Image (tube, rainbow, N blue to C red):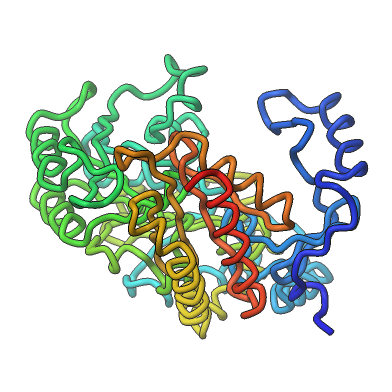
Length: 453
């Protein structure tokens, strides 16, 4: 008999059940209303998770196809991470990361630099992806000496004031628009001809022409010194950067002295079948942002660059110039070191193999809808998007939201993605069993068909 972690869905109440509904009522009374979406049929409240399973407050068991926003690539509660955190917790729970650092911080940084393409890599740690992006934007500004920034439509880089300036989604930006840095130019994200959503303005050659214009003319705040891009836009709808565009972008940036920042918070450390996704799409960044998978479930992020870039920062004279109270937190560092040992081992290959099985199954089950151009299935490794299309080949607004809700009712956790919620995003743990993969393929195909694809 399978154990919790490898189970198929087991629903013992309606979804959400009375326990989740009661918790929703309690949460409504204490949390700001802008945070958690609460409705009669959403959400479920988690009580326990292991492997690829989540158990909610009513005892319902779900198969997690979200990886908890992509964090749980090793699965929920991976034994090596749990053991590392337990050992560290008996020795040192908190340190003084930028004054009297814990030794766990040094071990983590050494392991991280050893994995990345720069032997002389230098790292700024944080606790969230937004912090890593903030550090990267500061670093690129110092290294380039120029204030202007180029980002891309559909990009999601975080919601702190600095990172929100380069995040493109109006929903997040509108409430605080006047506080955001005005020197950011958002270009269309390139789409190859024949790919759903491709149009004249986001053809790769048209985007490169727009980039050339910005590099020559600058932004509203001056010359361009930073370019930030995701090799695959995860929350933007699993949109993959065309390889030729990635190479051309890198060449143009180098020629103009622009620092290229790759936001690999979602794609990095194995999820897309490689340590970094950037080389897979022709991108050669100067700075990389990492997070999510890095902490194995604990809050941990990193901004990494070679010494030639990072030494644009002056040395600390006794006061750290970019830091936080929990920088280099011992428990998070211990967890991260355990994660990186797996990334250096078989994790990318496992993600590639499980992702290939998921893609094969979805492509086969949805073959008719794909042929009729009602659905597009795309992805790399364990980052997969299923986009539901209208008669014009564009994403159907809200269709991914509806499909995710149908999956929830069947015991599968998934997320909608893209600016209009037209995409069903799958970023499950690499510990999915073959039975869970097969069940997920069936459930996704039925959910997609059930919303009219």
